[in-house]
Image (cartoon, rainbow, N blue to C red; front, side):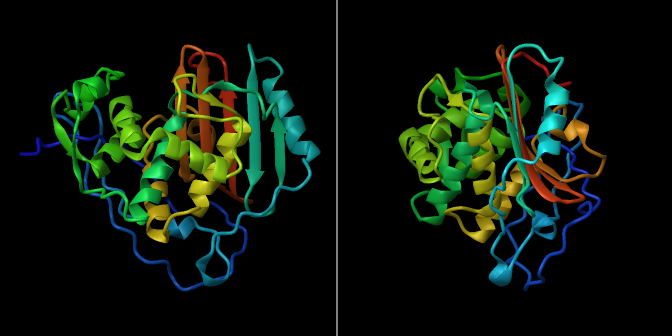
Length: 308
């Protein structure tokens, strides 16, 4: 029997997208599968549970036939680069920032090719690989898997929150939710073994990502590469439209709110993945802003430097 899995769904306040660039109207996209309610373990107490009933299709930028537009990166814009430099001038250690407006191509980067320990950013790579294999018929999201002891040993104090322990069973789909929404590492390692870490890295190479590799414990990553990876997720590279929307649904519900989401106006839609460790504070986000959707990738070599 499958033990009930208690997953946390953090509140996402979507008051509609904030100021979009004009888009060409197209027939509505297919309805994605609505995420099942995720309930909080009673003993954890402090989280409000809510189902994300509205998919992010209303925030999508499209052209004919529903294709997602990602404008080519233009030459760096001096104003944006200067703003980044000003924000970083008093910072400690190393920091990197990449921004790319997907509507008009504006792009700026500071230290975009600097290599950092990627921490939990690797989970976004596994997310894309899971849905890529699911669409190819190589993986069934309803398949039941066991959280063996070797996976539970990677716990970062989220298994108790999820109501899971070594030996429990859950579906691959629920493992993906746990990996993204609460950034659980035990289920992430399980999924990495399920899809094959080498396969996930091969997908990165297909996207033109060369300096980032997640098939080893060093987890080297750059802000520029992570921006490319999030753009691939946002545009659904190699996956179906339904899978693209579901990946965005999950990233919209990422539970850590102190990074990019903490710095934008309330009600702004932000789909993102954070990563942090003793030498890492990262956030890679897709933000629906007044001038169109943009990606912002921020990486530092410091611990818990969310104010930056």
